[in-house]
Image 1 (tube, rainbow, N blue to C red):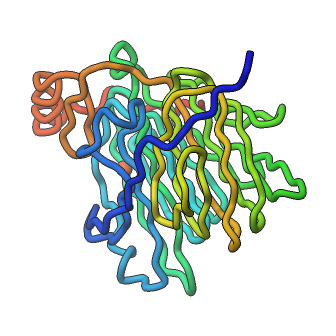
Image 2 (cartoon, rainbow, N blue to C red):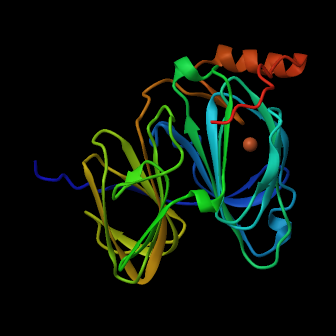
Length: 288
Ligand code: FE2
């Protein structure tokens, strides 16, 4: 079978956004883009050298119906949740949290010299699993395999690249999550599943994508059309990018703040449970 290259469908510039208790971040996509990135709901890029932009953090708040994936490139985030997990997400670490029926947590960035940089991706959960038990995966950077060659380095958080499998498994939407660092002008190719949603977020430098002239600069998210192969090339300064794919759900999305369900009734139910203190269904620790 000849390969079918995925070409650029949309390029969006990450927008300055204020979140949590006053964290300045760049939002690559969010609830204004539903259902374009299905099954992905939101991608935020934290990044600042000024602690005032991030130390207010994300104090105690609920989630239901989604998975939140926090990946830190530089800096530390202290977290604590209603499952009893407590710890620090350090540079290079990933926290893949499945809120399922409900979780309360806080995510507090720690003051640091120099650059603080990281990402949070929201992954939707299929309707039949939205009220399933929560799960938590805290991965040290050492747990994340990387592939090095002449082109650069690829870290595999989830999915498989060149026979190397990432440590995050068993996620309903079958995601691939790669952190790709390319040398200047290096080419990169990735086989992907046809029908899956694929996007790339350019973190630093710039890259050229199939079917579009010109360099896509940093802080842009590129949504690719269908096909079975992603092909791109770094610009003269090299490129650091995230490459993410997943199986679209094609289900209705009802979204209120940190809770994403399928219907308004389910959202109202969640709000009522929060008011009455019955939101949390599971308090046991379950390591995913
Ligand atoms: Fe959160």
